[in-house]
Length: 113
Image (cartoon, rainbow, N blue to C red; front, side):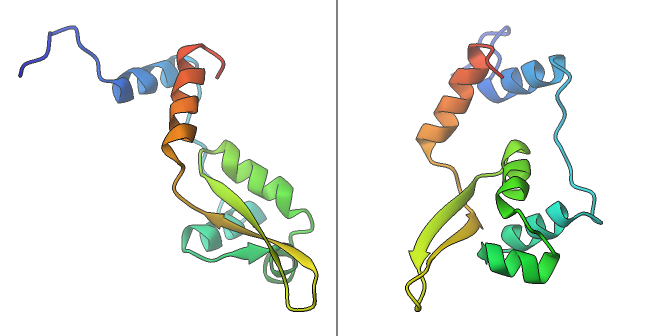
């Protein structure tokens, strides 16, 4: 099946729209705490707030996670109860669901982002 010559795939259209607005993919400076957290999450580690403070010196993990999310990565916060009965939030990078991806495409099509 051949496509019309003026047919543009959604990925290319999104990339064009993204570039027209002047937005570029954000990269992290390797010397920052954000990069260190991102690197750990990207390599499959789950990180809690206390682990982030001990390993990377991060006092406010939610702010760093927010920066990573704004760069386009799906960071999930999973709550669990530790052995001593304390609620702990573990952060992990995962694959976004189809619904989340669809919502992103719709927001871009409506010009919201």
